Length: 275
Image (cartoon, rainbow, N blue to C red; front, side, top):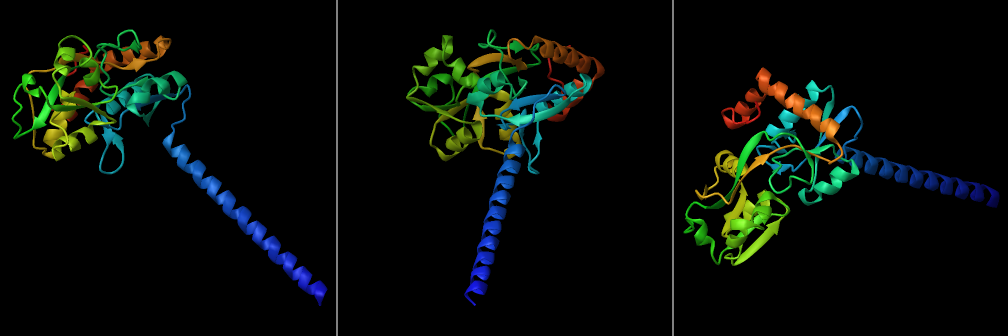
């Protein structure tokens, strides 16, 4: 009888061990799957585009959860021409250089300003003009840049707006602010503006206009830009071979009408400057 009880006990222990082992394997597999969906595999046949996923209309996630935007569609068209697949890798904007230098991404393609960064990357030719503008609530008493004196102003960290405030007229203007706040993305900045937590946001004109028009936000832009600039595709400085292929493809798209078609879809007209 004791022998039978011992056998039963040992059997129960064995079942428990296998059950625990099964749970452990299942948990590990789930974790791996989650990780694989967030990090894009980079290889010689794939053009991995690093972008800020909250930067419409250049790159963002639509209502169906798909990444889309002017720059992402342009990147896909370029990849088709140079015989590569395209993959979109969302990145934290303030970690973009680390992502690029580690090889996680091949390029930064997302309303990426050349001005002030000319020597930091291997740049494509500029393809769009842009301005850094001041956004305020529609009923704000702020009507000129001079009215920002003593106010709380918000920008995205490591953005072109922040850079524009570090030199020349921008630096002089920043000295008049009551407070300059940096945040991770412009969605947060515009929510802060809407709630009254800040008085103004400085950001890219294309993004500001898109947010106002598509989301019917009660904002307006001041007429005087903080800075004028141009967008390009940024590669690691040594990666000139891929940069040159992308440049050639951009010119092909400009010549065959593909670039105009993408621009008209997102902006209503052809605003690209590559010929």
